[in-house]
Image (cartoon, rainbow, N blue to C red; front, side, top):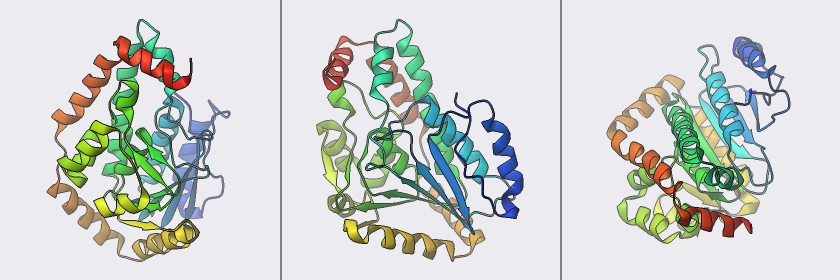
Length: 284
C-alpha cells in the first residue's frame, strides 16, 4: 500500500506533531502522489490528484487513510475538512483497469473483495470523523467517487457536474457504500432510479433530489463553496462535533447491508458477464 507522500510540507506550528507523524509514513513511497493535504486555521483541504480522472486504486485508498489519520490527530485543531479535486472531474470511481486485471486472475475475486473491504474501512472512517466534512463536486463524481462524497456530511455540486452509480453497466454494483448511503440519504426510490437504471444526473437535479445540499453555476462554484466552508468553520467546534454525533445516531448504519455489498462484488467478479462488460468498456 502506498505511503502518504502527498502532504503539503507547510504546517502551522500546532500541527507539527501530526505533520511529523505523517512525514515518517512517507519515506517508503515518495513516488506516489495521489493527493495533497493543506491546513489553514480550522480548515483542512484534501485535494485529489491521482490522474486525470482521479480513479481510485489501492494507492489512493492508502493515501486517503493516512490523510484521515493526520486530520484525526488530537492536536490537529481542525473543525472542517474539504475534499476537492484539481482535475476536471471530482473522481470517476474505481480504477477499472485494476478491476479488469483482477477479472482475468484466478485470485482476482478474492483480491477485489479485499480492496472493497478497504474502501469500506476508509469511507467509514471518513464518515466517522468528528469534524464537518465537505465534498466539493465541481466535476463528475461517478461510482466510487460519488460514494466518497456520500461519506461526507455536506456535498456541494456544480450545475455542470455529473453524479451517478453506473456500476451495473460493467456487471458490478456500487460496492463502497453506495447502495446503503444513497438509500438512507435520498430514499429507496431515488436509489433504485440511479443504481438499477444507471441514471447519471446533473448537479441541479442532484440538489432537487437531496443528493447534494447546494448546487451552483460553474462560475459561482468556488466562491460559493468557500463561503459555506467558512460559515461552518466559524461555528463552535465542540457544538459541531456533538451535533454531528446526534445526527449520525438518527441514521445508524446497518452492517448487514455493507456486508452484502462486499459479498456481492466478490460474486460478480467471478462472472463472465462482468469480464465481458469491463473489456467492452475499456475497448479491450
